[in-house]
Every structure is written in C-alpha cells, then in structure tokens.
Image 1 (cartoon, one colour):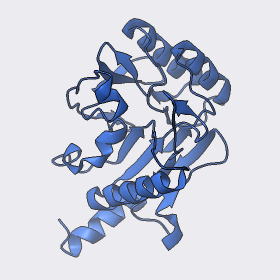
Image 2 (cartoon, rainbow, N blue to C red):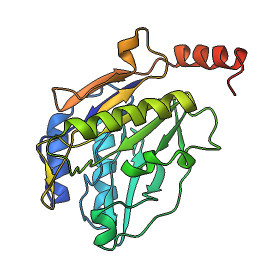
Image 3 (cartoon, rainbow, N blue to C red):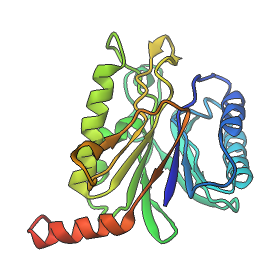
Length: 243
C-alpha cells in the first residue's frame, strides 16, 4: 500500500483555500491513500467540509483522510474512498492548549476503517500522545495522524524529536505503521509556529536508520507500507514472547 503525506507550505483560516492548494499539490492516481494535516478544513461548515474531502477523493482517484475542521466546538474529520463513499468520521478526543482555551470540546473515540483488506485508524494530533487511544485495537496495520504541531520552542527541532520518538514508540509497541501529516514549519496558527513533524514511523525497517522517515523536503511525500514485512515482524515478536 502506498500512502501520500501532504505537508502544505501554508495554512489559511479559509478551508476552501486549503483544499484548493491541496488539489494543486496532488498528482493523479498514484497511491492508495492520501493523508491531510489537521484543520485542512479550518472552520468550514460540516456539509462544505465533507463535500471538499469527497471531491478530493474522487478527483484524485485515491482514498483521502481529510485532516479535520471545527464542526461547532468539536475538531472532527472524515475519510472517503476513491469512489466517494464515506468510510469513517472521527473526532479529536484530547483538545490541546490553544483549543482548550478557545472552547473546543473533547469528541468521541472512533473506530477504524478498512482499505484493501487492511485495518487503519485515525488519531487527530495530540490523541497519538495517549497510548490508551490504541489499547484494545489489535492488529492495526497503520495509524494515520493528521497534525498541526504548534510549538512553544524557539525552533522546530525539539518538537520534531519528540514527535519522532513518540511515533516510533507507538509503532513498535502496537506493531503498526504510524504516518503523520503536518503543516510546514513556517506555518503559524494564532501566532504560534508549527514544527513540521510530517513523516512515517516504521516498526520493522531494514536498517537502524529507517525507524522514522521525515520530515520531507517536498509538500507531498510517498511511502510504501510493506504489510508482508509487518506481518513477519508480528509473527517473530509473538514467537519471542512479546504479546
């Protein structure tokens, strides 16, 4: 399975402008799933947000994890397949920092969705930092994380390191790929800079340097999820007593 991680260079409070920019960035049908960053839809009305994600999926010929938007006081997103069928709606369970202070409320935990016979789960940004978000969801093949990684550090490096360590820890503990799409580090949200933590955590790389790949230089990066290798990794861990 091939996944495209989208890291747009700028975020706009106009959700339509963000989707217009993503449409220009994406190539034709060249992957199985596209992952957008958190708040790609900004504060679009729910109907408009869903329509834009669906149109992007149909137009690109690819399943799209549509980042999120503010549906009232809840940070919420959706997944559509390439045929325009709604596969999943998901909420942010753990609003963080600026969101809490601005009145964003916790949403409800969601299930996952299946694509090409594989089980995928979406966690919105800070939800990845709570291992309970994944507990009890066995044999997940990939965790997809739309993020908007605002940071209080002077530069993006410290937050990137934290996100990379966290992503790899989740990937190894739960024996799954963890893919993160974030905005470019020069983006700001309400005056706070973004860290640009886009990348892929691989629990079973071929070399020691492959546990995390990213952030990319380009606004769209492609990654292959080798599920045969992941299955072999799981079997090996089971044989060695890791349950």
